[in-house]
Amino acid sequence: MVTITESAQDYLADLLGKQDDALGVRVFINQPGTSRAETCIAYARADDIKDDDERVEFERFSAFFEGHSLPYLEDALVDYSTDRMGGQLTIKAPNSKMPRVDDNSPIEDRINYVLYNEVNPALAAHGGEVSLIEVTEDKIAILQFGGGCQGCGMVDATLKGGVEKTLMEQLPQLSAVRDITDHTDRTNAYYT
Image 1: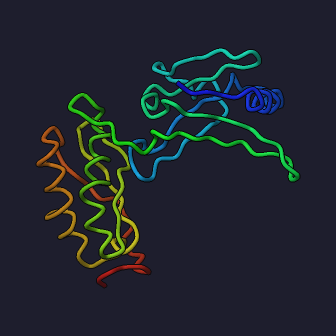
Image 2: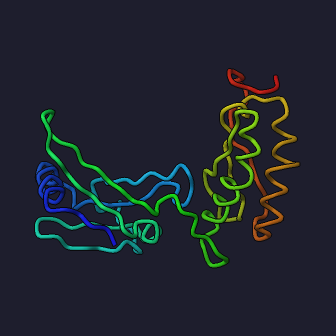
């Protein structure tokens, strides 16, 4: 599980003392299991707490660990160290970028695994990338292209012949794949 050092606990408790509506801190990982994984700590307000969050009581505050992020937070360390400029809170989560997917993983994790390990390496040759925005209730994967793919004249072919085909073959429970990218911006487009 996550270790929060005593100095980090003191620092977080002091920050929380300045908030009227924070119930504690919430720790989670954006885009877990991918090269873009980011470990985050935020104020936990009533609307932020989810049913699958794991609550841990510390001496001066509560921490809520996002249920979905728990496997990626294994062996994580939150520390605070002072220096001449004041201090710095650091979060080290060595497992945050490790893909942890199997047939029982949430569909979002499986889509991200395919995107970051199979699709994006191919798109990188043209300076492009694609990321998952959401999966709708109808099992439609909503994607957004960036880099050389944004505004590219070949993006429809890339979406249909590459990205959609790969995702639908590997994740047959998906009903469709949609692109929400604003392709009118052709600043970095590989093909115009």
